[in-house]
Length: 483
Image (cartoon, rainbow, N blue to C red; front, side):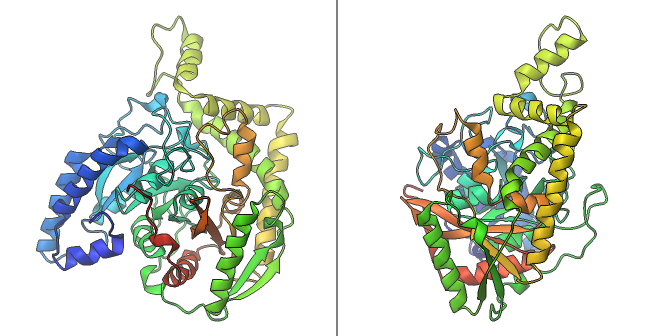
C-alpha cells in the first residue's frame, strides 16, 4: 500500500480494494518503524487520523466520492491545526497549540483528507537544508548523511521514503522545489495568491506560498485542487477561478514553446546536472515542444535582492513573538526589556536571529533607501525580465538547484554558500510566478530536479508538461534503498 500514489489510492478506495482506515493504520505503523531514521515528523496525530479515516469511509459508504476522500497526507508544521502543536520548527512555538485551522488545513479536511501528522522544517521556514529545526535535522532518504533540502525537508523526506503519498509544503525562495529536487519528488509553488496564506505562519509575507509535494505531477494536481481557491480571510488571496488541474494533464505538447535562459548555465552549475537538464530538453522536444534560448539579464541580482527583502519582512513578522502573548517565555524576567530580550534570545535559533538582524538593519533609518528600496526596484526588474520572456515562450526550463544535496553540516560555517543554492528558485518568488520541480536523473546516487516556470495562474500548464514528461521517463518511479 505504501508504494501507491494519491491517484492509485483514490482508485483503490473507490473500488473498495481497501478502506481508508486500513491504509491509515498501515502508514502510521510504517512511520513509527522508519521515521526515527529520518526525523521527518515533529508531531504524529494518530487519533485524529483514525477518526478522519473512519469518517471518510462512512462518507464513501453513503455514496460520496472524491480524489482526496480518505487519502492520507501530512502538513508542514507551520500550517495552524486546531488543538495540535504548531511549532514552526522553533523552540519559540514548542508549546503553541493553534486555536483554529489554517484555510489549507480546513479545505483539505473538508475534502476528506486524513492528517497523519505535522512535518519537520527549518525554523520559521528559514533555510535550505532542514538543519535549523529545534527538533533536529531531517535526513535525506536517498542518503542519510545528506540534507533533504529546506525548508520543507520534513514533508519531502516523508513522501520520498513512502511514509505517505503526499504532503503540504510552503515556498518562500524555493522551499518546495529545492527539497523536491533533492529527494526525487514533484513539487509545485503556485502563483502568489493562488493558495490562501491564512493560518500559515509567516516568514516573508510577499513571498510565502503554500503548495503540494508528491511523487508525480498527477498527484500534485490532485492536492493542489484541494488547496487552491479564493479566501476572504487572506487579503493577498486572488479571486480567480480554479481550473480542473487533473482534466488538463493529457494535453499535447506539440508546438509548446520552451525557453532555456542562457544565464542558468554559468560556472556555478554542476556540469553533470547541466547534462541531465539538456537530456530533459531533448525528451520534451521529442514530444513536440520547440526549444529556444532566452535571457533573464537581471537574474544575477536576484539573490542579494531576496536576502534583503525576505529578512526585512521576517524581522517585522517575527516581532510578534515577544514572550508576552504566546510562545516561549523566559523564566523570572527582571523587567519588560529583560522579558523581551531573553524570551527572543532563548526562543529563536541562530539562523532566525541572523535574518532578523539583517532585516532590522535593512529597514533602519538611513539604510532603508540604500538596501530595501533598491532591492524592491531589482524585484521589479526581475519581474519585467519574465514578462518579456513570456512574450516569446510558454514555459521556462532550467535546473532547480546548481548542485545535488550536500552532506549534513557541510555548509554550517558558511551560511552564504547555502543561500547561493537558491539561485534558480528565488526569482519565481520575487516575481510571484508559479514554478514546478520534477525528477530528472541522478548524480552520485542523489536526485536531480528540472524546474519549469510559467506565467501567472498557469499551474495547469506546468502540471501538463510535467505529467507528459513523466509518462515518457521513469525517474519519478525510483525509490530510495531501504524504504
